[in-house]
Length: 238
Image (cartoon, rainbow, N blue to C red; front, side, top):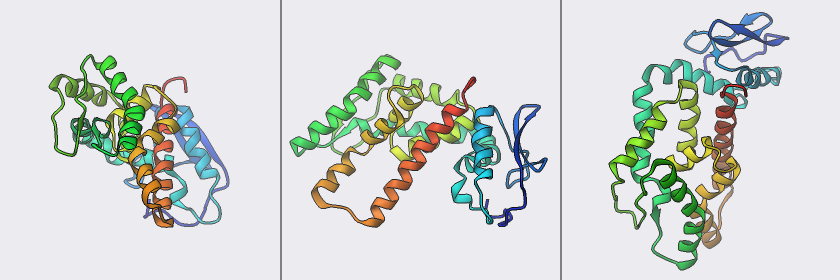
């Protein structure tokens, strides 16, 4: 989006039906991606989110305030052409998932991790019919191949738009299993974000934090919650 014009040049923003979805029109002219592809998304709900970002722009365009537009651009210009690579990158998280690696001490942290992550492990075992291996320490312990195959099957079925959102859920939380729990509606995205932060919040109670770290955490949280919101807006009937 860095190549976009910086000044607002339109007055009216509308959503229009297209052959394969919904387009955004600025004064009747359809928006294109940075690579000049038509910006067409699969659901009206997601198109409405994008349109609202364009309506909210002031005198100057601020790409940072347009996460839905950025996600659509990424899905069309980048992810769509390399679905296998992106799916593989994401699935790799499952073999060393955050919720499967626990602290050895202190006892209070061990208890917090078990309380927060135990339900995700149980949900995973129920959904895929394979019990994830939970260990202590940081030495890699491979997960059962049948579990990894099940995880990959769920990732590769995602569309380019869904995969773009899902990538952010995984990257921001550090957990493929938490991201899958989000899209399965296991719990609210806010609650699932919170359990991804167990270790970090423990460290804060021990050592404190600073403004820079807090700002980065808030940015990651906003990206995570936006990704969940966009994913659900992409679902049929949303």
